Image (cartoon, rainbow, N blue to C red; front, side, top):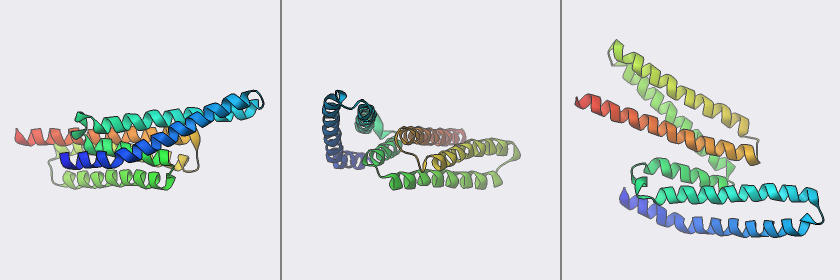
Length: 192
């Protein structure tokens, strides 16, 4: 896994640098255009300022996700960080279709976990079933919220789109951590 982690980082280093270069270039162009137009066209300046804010957010997001991926702590949460990084890449690259495919794979993952819990509930004592059904309800609520937000944002752009991306990344990480903690707890319980 360490080897995979390093290869993945190395493979994406060029992509990150290229995207950052494009973002910095566009940032500089927008700032110059704002300066030039401020005198002539007040309304167009507002649109450019909004785009400039969006570019800045993309730069910060991309750098933060990439640095997190490279950090020594990433080894423990490799899949979670990798998923968050890939979602950020999709957002910055503007590949909305791929973003929705990734989001749908998160929903599919949740559905698979629900199926596993339901199967597990069939084979356990009644006092444990309530615990399992609580877990099912928890992750079903995550899944339902993701689905409803995806439906709302499918035709959106700009700020709504960005907020949804960040929310999905955070929610995916929360679900992953919830399931990881649950597996650790089950392992500890079975070893006792």
